[in-house]
Length: 133
Image (cartoon, rainbow, N blue to C red; front, side, top):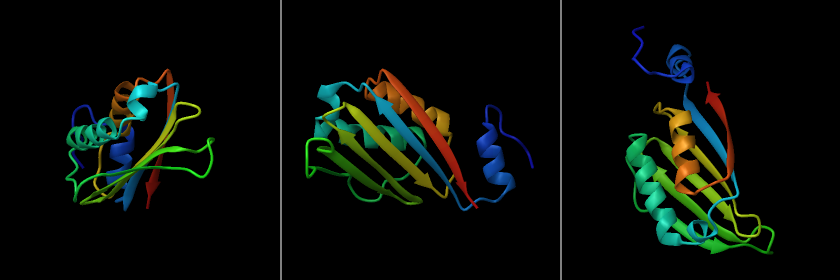
């Protein structure tokens, strides 16, 4: 199978295993408190990350503020994409964010994770990638 230039190892593995899906779990700490508390900025993120990873949005992003207690209160977001779903939760008390990108179409997880860190102004971030085979 021909390899694309600049293609990551995980994308090559995705193709070689003919994986069903690719899931990236992104954890952000020390986010910009103004950004994670702004529903319009969260919607903007969804549009921009979908454009970046070439995913077609299905409908509009849902961004809802809720939480039964201060520890978990904040916005939650979902965006259906033609190939699955992007979701996230933004924790006000800790200025943390937890984003999941799942798709049965390939994309570059590291690129998505770095864009996400920069967009939300996080002091630190980590991500895990899971192939669904």
